[in-house]
Amino acid sequence: MSEKNFDNMISETEETARQLLEGRNAVLEAFRSGKTIDKLYVLDGCKDGPVQTIVREAKKHDTIIRFVARERLDQLSQTGRHQGVIAQAAAYEYSTVEDILERARQKGEPPFLILLDGIEDPYNLGAIIRTANLAGAHGVIIPKRRAAGLTAVVARTSAGALNYTPVAKVTNLTAVIQQLKKEGIWFVCADMGGELMYRQNLTGPIGLVIGNEGEGVSRLVRENCDMTAAIPMNGDIDSLNASVAAGVLAYEIVRQRMQV
Image 1 (cartoon, rainbow, N blue to C red):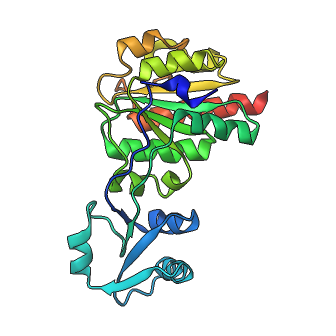
Image 2: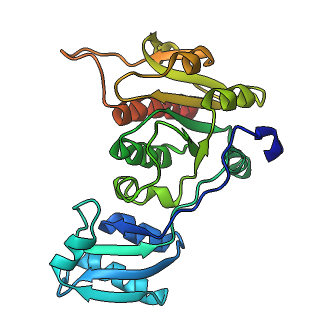
């Protein structure tokens, strides 16, 4: 499929200002993935093994290293959880939907996409990107409006998965679903009123749609999905956190794919 088929649906590749990466996993995986890192701030006197591993990686890449006091790291931190290391890096670039489909083609696998309908909590977004990577999803698609973007909090919460899992930002999620259906991809959305997920056929090319933390999948997006899948609930409350729901459904897809 030509990328131009997604005209007016996919935003241009975006790059914002320099970004700060915080936390040992996020920084180490950024180095290992080949991401451009301009400067590394390290807690002066820290001898922890993971931090020393990061310092060695920085030296391999000729990255500028600054050993600073904890107060300086606290001033720089955007998350309050820097774990003694903060990297100044090039901002994360958004991919396109075509990039994600090409990734599936190169791997010789049926596309497995995760689409997020209005996920506004950056911690949920980061956790979902981490799950997407571990579950073998080829990419994540988010809308331009009413959604978290790729911030330092998202990068840290993804534990480095953001360096490996492409994220596309699109103008109209419903239009992208309609276009991808023409490519043979089926869509299932998480919905408490849907069919039990174990009774659904979730094999083959598939897009998993996860909705907003409070409202779920929007009506128009839900109506354009082929299936609605419910997670069995046996407790005293009636819903799961969005990132947990994404993990449960993603691994049901993994389970079914392994049995084919």
